[in-house]
Length: 549
Image (cartoon, rainbow, N blue to C red; front, side, top):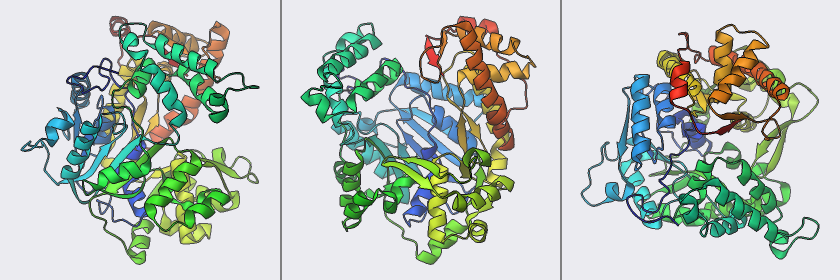
């Protein structure tokens, strides 16, 4: 699709989005390893470690991680000079000294005699988010070779990738785009994606009388509709790569085995528990004794489209007693208010998973949420309160973590990170108000982040300036127009009329000031210094039109 060159066919004409992924945090990865009975790379929170991000993009996620975990040493690699320059500049502005970002490609790093800028075999964690199935196979093999060479024995390799069968339907869209993307590079950008989506939608036939394609893939129509709302840079990054090729799990596992990387489990917690699968599927999967065959059967049954897999170079198995002891000391913070989960005590809690909805008993979860609403608590301290078996409590906490209701308690290590996290958050808020599309603010107490948009940054600034309604919403609306950011309603449609825009801003402001700002303050991430974004700076660096919900 793209011409081979220094980018090896990977889309390089625009920058990738700046997004933080909680699954890349050491605390999250350690817990995922424990769920599979593997000894985590760190003994406890606050212990020094080495972390390598292969294909770190703009460096946003890596910089946030470096601020949250000052005890770690972070390395990032990306082949795109714009990405590297952005990451280095962000780290410098934040005053971080524990992060290095290097411009290189995997083929060069994997070449015989190549010197790695980090200690060979010394990294506790190596991550590659959204890279493996978007690059050509030689580059993918080089990626795996560098990961294996960099990982210490017993360390964790996180690899997320597109997988089949979930991408079978959309592969038709991607193939149609092979005719359109060369033209899209010449101008028009998103129009070509939208045109391809419309053509393929016509081929599906009417919903009442679908064509053979439409009957075979009944969800494809809805998936194509999402193309209209997706950012153009995402569409290029997702579809416009010469190496675009989703893999079945067994294919990825086999390629990792060639580099001594053994499959451990998923970084998506709900996928660690076969017993959560729907009954008919569960019976089929549990009868299969082979781990890889079970994973494939579960993927087929759930039409899996994306995997977050953990591999290890050497499995360090814990005894049941060691497993219980290690889990028992882990503590948790409540992130979402208890009433948000138990507003109707008699109704089941609902958790989303790749295989559908999981329902939780409020009588079982209620005591856990009540205890955490009072103060952080460990698994050992929660056991007598919830009166559930140890294994059942672990499942409950895993689902609450995945749903974003709770987070890991970092204790003194989190407190140590608070000052530099607040400095970074102040920088991010200011740059958001200038039009930078950053997406999260850091929470040092839990070693993770909370979603925070450009719109929410404008609302926070107006509140800090003690503006009252209707002046607050009017000023925020002017700020959005100044940045060419479109306001979306709950239905993801652009809000056009001014009264509706004001109402929407007021609705979001209530959430920002009622829950997000208090959460930042409670977990040590709220900046104490005043915000200093200037209007003249914003006008000099006007961003392209974006949609903001």
